[in-house]
Image 1 (spheres, rainbow, N blue to C red):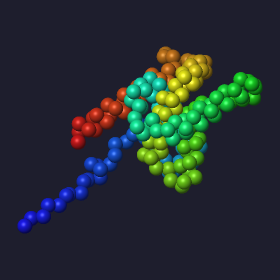
Image 2 (image 1 turned 45 degrees about the horizontal axis):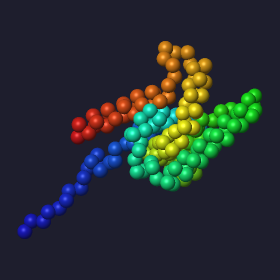
Image 3 (image 1 turned 30 degrees about the vertical axis):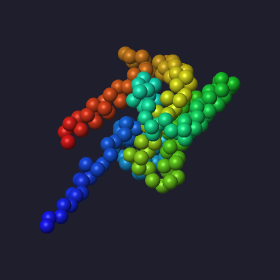
Length: 191
């Protein structure tokens, strides 16, 4: 009698495909593992990645309307980001000379980097996935606030950046999402 055994899948087969957030985080981290980064560098990489996820989710919300992003608990967490953003902008309007604007993605970057460092483990894949779900939830549930933030960001960035193309965070996020999707399709076709 012959026994049938299920062969163990190779690590490449069982590995979950990288999330868009994890892929972006890797782009900003370079070759440095997230767990080895000093807090400030990890915070900056998380903030930069979150800004592009917010832009992508604003430009293409349908790509982010998933069960993991639409959970009530994540809506509450996105609400904290929205309140911090609103409070920061109110403070900036009240005292224009002594206040620095803090964008919602900076609130996310600080919070996520702090949670990861405090836990003692900054796994890039898990951190990137958390980043994607939080930024996606914020962009979906607080779209109106994000629209106002993006308009202000565009005005500030246009004053700082004098390039050929006007700064457009939703367009940049959508381009990065398209590049990620093309990479994933290429990887799926190659397997």
